Length: 317
Ligand SMILES: Nc1nc2c(c(=O)[nH]1)N[C@H]1C(S)=C(S)[C@@H](COP(=O)(O)O)O[C@H]1N2
Ligand SMILES: [Mo]
Image (cartoon, rainbow, N blue to C red):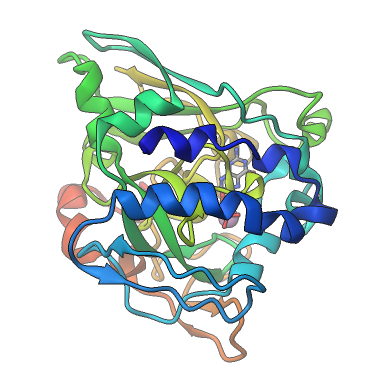
């Protein structure tokens, strides 16, 4: 059953933005069926007012889930940052059909005992997927609440057995200028690169993400596999990953290279540390009018504050 999630005969990449919504019904059948088959006892049912095809999905709700109102599917999939497809918010929705996700592989290399190249079926065999409803706080001071589908990244990292030298984890997105026309622009260093300290990567909140709203990831959200790190600004959550490298040295990150004064390596959500050009105290939840206060670590202090006990967060922003 698991296999079906990624072997369904219609892939998001075959779906142009024009026909995206018409095609959803067909591939929903494949992906939803497999997700429900993996479901754990505690069940929740999505109501998707914005969808033409209401598709109740059984999934296990994780204890890490927020119970806030979820951002609409339409906003989650139309208002994106994915500079490989352009810098406009709707560019990814319009352009990401170019991404080919069939036969996707992800290599896990570096300071590990068992380097391995995983295909999507290998990934799905590592752990049962769960639903994690997380806040995503973009550095641009907007936020969303998104029901992701995935499992802790730690399950993948443990499978390759990090060596004692592994202190950081680097995530590298696809580099393919044919599929990703935004890479013709030097706005960022390509491929998109991000990184975490290994204890951050191993934290149970850090999600290897395969879907959202009970479906496989739409291309514009980073298909077929991305990272979601909910206590950090959104740009730490790299999309469409092809390489994960464990390293001794702190890896470079595309945004840090583009502007080191504005985007630090840690980039923990922190209302007390302003971006040089704007405050991070408040945020606009997409779909809402009034701004709300931004929470320390995006509200995830309970699980992550300990990671930074000995770190000056003003210096290591
Ligand atoms: N490869 C890649 N990953 C990326 C980005 C990008 O431009 N390229 N944008 C980041 C930013 S700034 C944010 S806020 C989130 C947005 O994720 P979403 O569009 O799924 O909400 O993805 C992050 N991951
Ligand atoms: Mo972002």
